[in-house]
Length: 298
Ligand SMILES: NC(=O)c1ccc[n+]([C@@H]2O[C@H](COP(=O)([O-])OP(=O)(O)OC[C@H]3O[C@@H](n4cnc5c(N)ncnc54)[C@H](OP(=O)(O)O)[C@@H]3O)[C@@H](O)[C@H]2O)c1
Image (cartoon, rainbow, N blue to C red; front, side, top):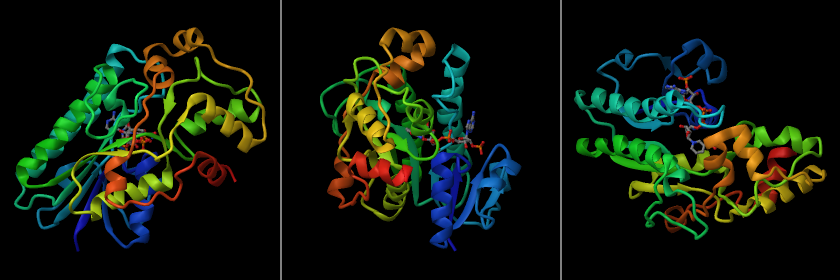
């Protein structure tokens, strides 16, 4: 049976993907730095390995879902963390390529992570055909994508999933919830920055859609078709929770508390249109923020 190799399978998106793959009866190998930790959160049918050379030569890896990467929003950025962001994405993907380059059978498809940070900040809507504004997030995403694109040399179909803010029980929403639940939430900065988000269930469906749509390749924006500016997002969140959202966090405080990370991830935004998903007839289960948040917070 063809097998899917997942990197970053123990993470927020990865584990949701793995449980869905298990439900669909797909065969999974998950590469993790900690087999023990990964086993606790993954289906028992998934084989968990800590080194690529544990994959025996007679196993045909049909598909790779490549999500591994040092978390960006955990703490302030410094030079060593920034290097780690690159190493854990680009160099890690280079190693994947080196491994598969020497195998007899190349994977048919690589679904590789990226982020809407690729486009850089801006107020005008962008789709996959737009060029990017330079900055740290752009450089990181572009470098990760370049590493993944090497797989084209093997005849592999490569999808680069430029992911928006994934809403679920982990990630950005989980970080926002405690102050909002206490009625201490509010807009960030001037509240005008666009937040292009996607519900975790749609995110998993996007990964599956990329696997199954043989004509899809290149950059694919994984964002709901209706993004919101931060002010609307926070007002909707507060409304769904039945709490006020009156306490704004001014830009200077964001910069003071979070430095460059706060500037790139909280104060800047981009309105990203999922043009290729819509063209390929992908149907979002949660195209609107209110329904997405109601589903997640019910
Ligand atoms: N969640 C979002 O809103 C969002 C938005 C845009 C892009 N993305 C990108 O999509 C990918 C998956 O996101 P996620 O939210 O699921 O991330 P996550 O929860 O932080 O999980 C990432 C996984 O990558 C592995 N990893 C972490 N640090 C690593 C390192 N230094 N070297 C090698 N592997 C490392 C870990 O797996 P092991 O511990 O098992 O090795 C971890 O489970 C990430 O690369 C992220 O940047 C996420």
